[in-house]
Structure formats: C-alpha cells, structure tokens
Image (tube, rainbow, N blue to C red):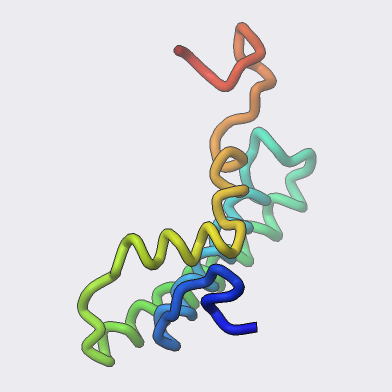
Amino acid sequence: MSPQESGIPALTEAESQVVDAYLAVLKRLHSVNPTRTTGTYTALRAAQALVSEARALRDALTTMFDRRESEIHVRTMARALRSLDGDRFLPRLGPSGEGTPSGGSGPG
C-alpha cells in the first residue's frame, strides 16, 4: 500500500522518525499520567521509558537539522500524526474526569 492510499503523506526518513518518536513519547506520557494509572511501579517504568523515547525524538530532530531539513511542515506532520491515530492520545494526557466537582474534565 502506497502512502497516498493509506492517507499518510510522503515524508523524508528523518520526518518519519520524528513522527514515530513523537507518538512513542505521547504513549509514554499517557502511561505516566498520575490521574490515569493505578500504581507507582507502572508509572515509574513509563517515566523511565519516557527518557529513552525523548532521546529518540531529540535524535530524530537532530538528524533533520543535520540534513538541513530546517523547516517542519506543520500540516504534513499533523496529517501524518492523524493518519497514525496520534490524536487518540491527546484527550488522555490531561487529568481524568474523576475528582473534578462535576465529574467533567475541568472548569468550563
């Protein structure tokens, strides 16, 4: 299946690494969220792994910079993240609905 058929835009190798690393960071952040985990050990392991994932993201961005890929094409990257289901993590990164006075996700 080509990138056009899958909905994933064409990316350079370094851009693909950035997207993959960013998604990995989001997954780890979700796992370490203290309002969404039940144990300190699980959160600790996720936080330890987050360090490695953040290094991978840094390295991918460094590769882009070293290859003189000086711009991040926001629309293209956003489309790639959506195509890879990255937006499913965003609602889970903030506090859970539990513990708020109305049972909602916060003021408003």
